[in-house]
Length: 491
Ligand SMILES: Cc1ncc(COP(=O)(O)O)c(C=O)c1O
Image (cartoon, rainbow, N blue to C red; front, side, top):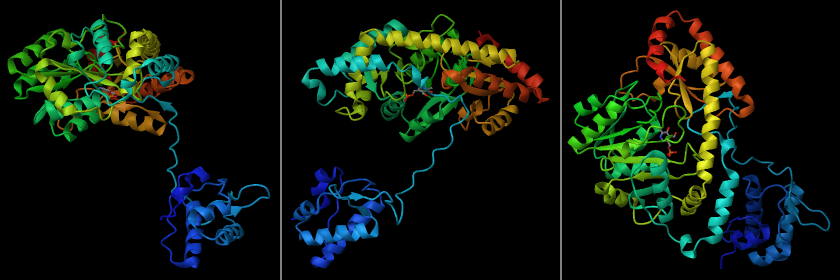
């Protein structure tokens, strides 16, 4: 029989495993128990204040003499590890860690003073009440079968709701049978790399490095194709031998330009003639502010486009829900890569998401978010304009690009970092084999600063950039050119 601390989990209220059986003889077991308790306290498994079981029960559980266990308690009390009070349990002492402390956690780095980081919506906007309401409804009414192993293609009702939603809002032409649910765009890219891309795929010269890494880790090389103010240079794509391309046509990430209508048509022609596949990352398609909403490329060519989206921008990146809309001819391969049962996504969350859409709460949330971010976008562009700083890429999404010269970009980033600003440089998104873009840029996520700091943070950033530009003798010519390139996107 094994006498171990596992037997004591219920009494201690903590899960603590320790075998004291290995020590031979009564003295050996007494010493082993004392040592085990000391080390459990030292390494933090028994925390200050934790009540130990009465020595009689512990003795019974460990099949040791009561006197032996009582002796161990006395010894540890005398050493200061435990404290005993009349009428109360023997507890772990507050001094707690006289020998060594548990593995130290790294100190959290100090919060940045001006946080314009990219990649997430304003967390305070998350529709908590609606999410709770949908969760209550789903969990309360779902059939028992819903709590079993999930369909790897995604919960059918969610795919149905999403097909209707994407058709209505983004002009996507699909049905529930062609939607595959994932945990986000990242997982979608990983699956496509394993099933569709083959040896190499084209990407935009500037994009999210994390996504390039995901694709390469999954076995596909990424080849950069230049971009400009009209989006991906489709002519350069056609000149390559590649048969697949991943791009962000509605709002290029990070420059913010849209793929020009002429290029959208040429891209579709390219896919048809080449037998190629267009992978459209529509990461912030719902958050458009000015122009008539640009529909998804998928709507033009459902047989040639794999459409990707996720809840990460409109809702939260903490909700790991993403989707792919896959043409018939590629569906079997993609589903094969997904596997025979759902292994990573929460089907329960998929169901909650469907309820959020069906109840209208998701539309309401997106509308509310859009007007919130539009106001921020307007405040940012106006403040920058008043200081002579041009910004582009702001007709959609959660970030803007401030135009600076290529030479100034690293200098501004360095000053910004010293002063507690979190911003990114355009060049940080460049594929290492790609040419630098003609002008530099400071990429600013305007969703992140908390409400009470937003105006002040934006004013401080405008001040920093305007001062740097004024002190730079090379700026006037280079920035003037860049301003000319990007001014059409400013409101
Ligand atoms: C270009 C781009 N696509 C997609 C996403 C969303 O990725 P995921 O759905 O994996 O959270 C992001 C998030 O930052 C992004 O920047």
